[in-house]
Length: 319
Image (tube, rainbow, N blue to C red; front, top):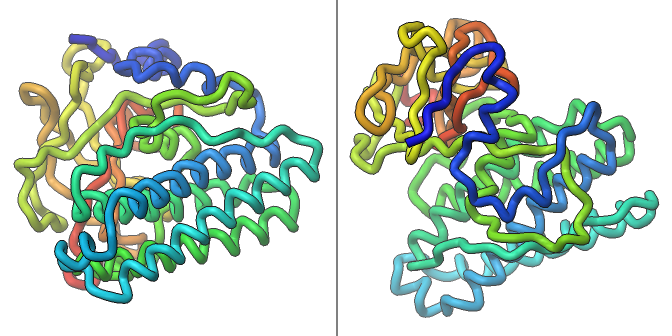
């Protein structure tokens, strides 16, 4: 089992210690600064993934399959519209990159594990939520006002997709007054498990995947602030350089991370979902948590693993 040692010197090597999926090396590259073309290709990478996902879901399952699974009309027709939206996003971003003289990335090969309608829609909900967080996290880096407006218009559509699918899953369509921005590497970490390989002609992106962090299937069905949960570190363990300094779980919010101690156990860590400080964004809905040795900030230099995705009770349900 790999050990990920958290120290100042080790942070740069953390991603390299991740269990490899690693036909992915072809789309990972360190870069001193990210450009608008990088951001558009990053967005296009995610849109390709979503576009292919919905095409495969709609190819594999019929309207009757959806109805048998409890998703009654017009859900199937609306999912077809969602699929068309994602296809349109792909076409738009591809054209924008070509117009800017940049090479757009092409579609990769994926494995979504489409075992059932219910699992597929649960995956769709996570992908749409991650899509919202991806655009939100990248917005501050976009230099072109035209690109920023276009990205904003895609973000709002992804948010409507997310709300609609969450509602179909009997989850709150708007569980928090704030959405959660994620960094490029945090988003890529969540996308990477679905990506099996990409064309060698694709331009490399300045992204890397952190080691995978997952929520235990033994966690309570309903998770809220104050709930004790388990996060799993498959095939590796996270330890401090001195063997005794604490490890923290950091829940990402738009107003900053919220930290809680993470207690090591066999195969992972246990922790209690923390309460956000007064005056900051609460933790609720589709939430993201990383492991770190630092309890003051979260950056690509301090993340040891994750994020893991958790569904947490809506913010206002906990007041």
